[in-house]
Image (cartoon, rainbow, N blue to C red):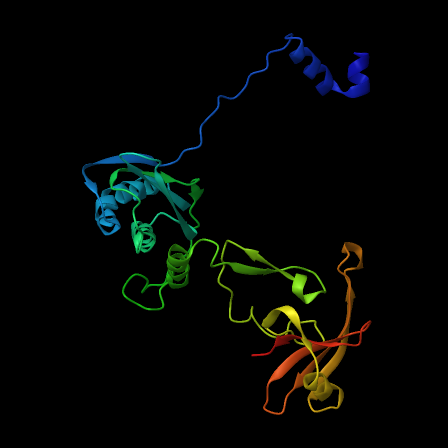
Length: 286
């Protein structure tokens, strides 16, 4: 009783369970549900172009499996088994959670396009990713009726590009609250198409606009280019905007940014390093 008053009844219960004085029921382990099915071919398939038709029934059963559970997946893994040697593994990534047979088939077709088989395929195994709940949303009345403005046009484009170019070749951009422009964004794998006002060159609450085209590294302006800036050959539209940040991580910057327009009309985002007094080009406005 004294221990319960000091530490609470939960501590006493833990001690009793450890000493087997109280039962400690445990919930039975429930394995995560996935679709996994293997298909053996009567004859070996030597060309990747013939795999798409052979995999059609397997994809149909996968889509039926997902529909019955009102769930979707965002990744599939295809294992091509050969007579000898390790299996060839192909990962199929989707831009959003889906259970549609058509989208699964399109991603598979793009992934098999141009694939060179290391050896003839005698069996395939399809393994789904983690099952996720489907998001309910209202569709356009003309979706799926041949309208080019369909609901999933952007999503299908992303999936085709990833299937052809690779999973890491197509990514999204997410903003980070950071004053240094080169550190104010990061890559994200999940793509969410932005609205028309999301990608603008001027954010609300900011005194100066930001260019959409930001160079990977600031480009030093030397010689004649630097002289043009200092002599006023370029018209200064806005500035200076001082950015002084990053001293805590060893990558501190102290810059004065300007928006300048050249004679032929190009708008540049340049800055002068306060310590060295050198000029750099950091971005170009569209």
